[in-house]
Image (cartoon, rainbow, N blue to C red):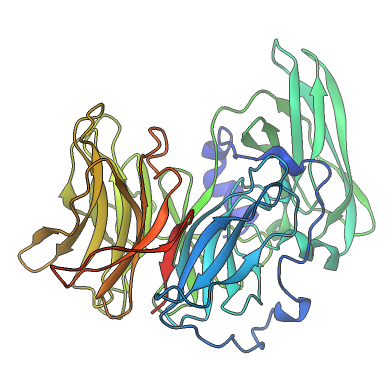
Length: 460
């Protein structure tokens, strides 16, 4: 789906949709090499994939002050802990954050969500891939990546804006293909023209229209009136755009690989499921995974595409309706309904992690238990088996919380976050460590793998 199709299909929705942004690098960030070489980005796919790293755990850790998050690899026994990727950008406010990770079936590439390019994207958080050796870095959502904009011809864009609100507006604007954001400060009824000097021209005609988004605090809004065909070597003006404070967010999150490793499924905002090829065209928005008239829970998290041929068209996810019970759902690609609700939880409980078993016989999940203000509250690990079906408890923690998790290729061992608390707003474990546990042994005890680490992903 390109931008012209996006405008036609989603215009009524996009008029009110906003995008999250971390402002640490606004107006001054410059792209680094992000751990990759230019020759790795062969648009024809001629570059051979890196060597596989089977039975390896990827995880996220803070790099240190002003450095953002980094992705590391480690063996299941704790050996060979090494860096895979980190952004070269400064992060003085500590807002560049890597989210969940997902290995492709061949263990040659890792998909991840991150906010580190939100200063040159329509999204606050984008989906990226990186090879198992740190090469072949790519941005899938709203491609190309910031560092690749320099390879395109450039044109100028002027965006007239007017503050129609009764209050002053102070924020930023981004135009697709620009190197970074521009400040926008207007009094009530004030007007100005925001000028972008060097905007990448991705192509000519209706299929290559580019647009601006308005940014205020941590939120964004796509400005429908600004769609325009950028002219290399020339300059164009958009229609006037009305300015008002955005009040919602867009983010690309929860990447999960299709079983043939040719595409990545992800969640856009709360409950839109899209899919992008591993080498998308510039501005490609993604194809809907479900039917156009789909009906899903209000909030979706923890996407997991099914393993192998038998489960290839299935997706596990955690779904929550407003003022209703959350649960784990199983749906088929292309369906219109929410799918089958396999597990139901109390409305005050939250699900912290979800992962398929490699043979597709079931899945593992973690969820909170106990009264909200009770000292006995905890989050534990469970296995769901399709045969029966039945749910089996695997841990029995008190006042400790199991978070995101991933299972080994033989299904015998799980790696998971474990911390002393969960964030009441996000439902994520606070300051977790990573532990490994043999789930097939009743006498096994969890072993510490990495301190101060999160978001594990075990390659098969």
